[in-house]
Image 1 (cartoon, helix red, strand yellow):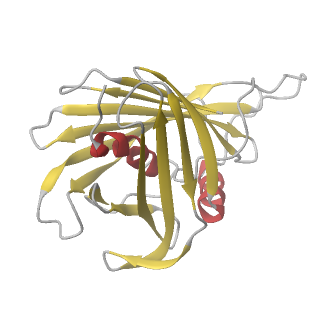
Image 2: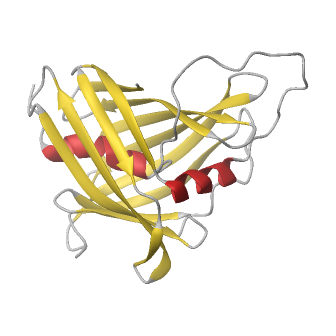
Length: 237
């Protein structure tokens, strides 16, 4: 099977609009219950800021329609300005290596931009796309609990930084699910649409959040739609 570069890039760009830094650590099961009082809320905003500021490097195995491996490396933040707003930027490079699809390897490099509170403002991936929020999004919730769900924001997508050509939009949402007495799962959902409002792909990024806000990526599940039936599952190596 053959993939165009934008299709490959979309997997990682949608990650950029969930939790930029995917978090360290491997998989594993939930924490064992010791009879302690269950944790009822988790400091999502603080955990997110810590991960974004520090940067990360994560490796994945790919299964589904295609098999292979992938890596996402995000640098620590540095001062920057985006669309006239002062804040921080971080570089991100994503690479894919397939064993049964073409091209056999590909790489995407770009920059992510945050405001002074580390709320994501947009991104620039030259040769792929340029994105910005339709309106400034609110910060992530200070805390979340199991059962919380919300549509977070809408992202406008252009071909490049001139913003001369609109290509679509992405709707961002999340849901918090039960895991253990001291952890929960946060599932970040990106739905990408073209200018005809046709769904192009749905990405669900699943993270474990601990009581101290530590975020650990588990899987990224991407299902293409309308123009493709490709399904890719990225599992943290």
